[in-house]
Length: 185
Image 1 (cartoon, helix red, strand yellow):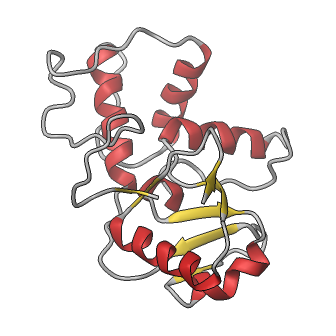
Image 2 (cartoon, helix red, strand yellow; image 1 turned 30 degrees about the vertical axis):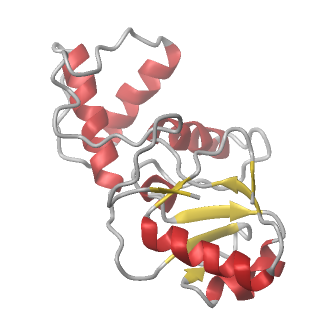
């Protein structure tokens, strides 16, 4: 599999196993252009799509993309991969996004709200006078806050001493430990 530099190679375990079977069935290398996305990455793509920039014509609002759950891929040669991916639980659900496939098999969790909740908590920790409602819903208040951080990134406190990451199993591209939530593709 060929994975582009900006791609986070993370999928939920059932999606990763189904992808491996599809690749094995076709017997060719797959080129993945997008897999897991952070909420910030999704916002950048969404903003570009809204302004018709960088050739991006479609992107879901952050908190609504299956890329944020480790259940979506964008691939090259999508038409060639479609029968192999579909045989293993992947579906092309949006005709207007022909390179995009969502995994619809069992054993997965919708974790999109977890990323939004984490962002809201981090924002509140570092902006106590501009608190967000921590509800896991990506609404106008959260979008405004995230867009503000993009314009003038603050120095955020994150880590064991901040209290923010307590209880979170944070996947990391460079320091990955396979658990029940993520597997590298």
